[in-house]
Length: 118
Image (cartoon, rainbow, N blue to C red; front, side, top):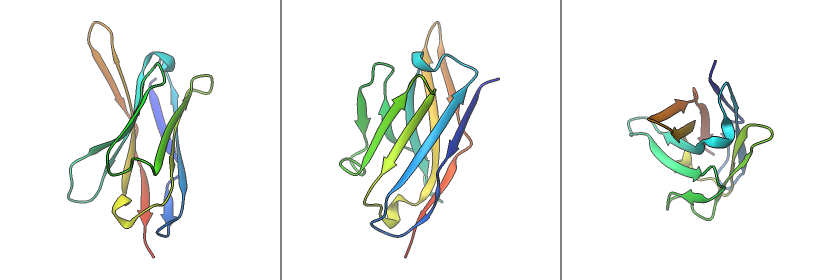
C-alpha cells in the first residue's frame, strides 16, 4: 500500500522556522522525484520545492533562500526546512512523488497545515 505521510506542521510566528517531513512507504522511493506543494484557502495548489531522484533541487521564487528541500533515501523520507516564515506561507503543505516508467506515476500525501501568524 502506497503511503506518503506528512508531519511537522503547526502554528508559528512570522520569522520562525519549521521543519516538515514526509515518510514514504509502499514504493521504490529512490526512483521517484519528490516535491512539496502548498495550497492556501481560495488558491490553486502551487509547487514549492523539488528534489529529483538524483538529488538536484529547485525552488519557487517565493521561497528561494528561505526553504530547503532534502531527501534521505535510506529513511524513505523527504524534508522541507522552512526559515524566516511569513504569513503568506500559510497553507496546507502536500508531499508528492512522481516517476516516469512506461507511464507517469504520481502519489500525494494528505497534507499538513502550516499557519504563520502573530
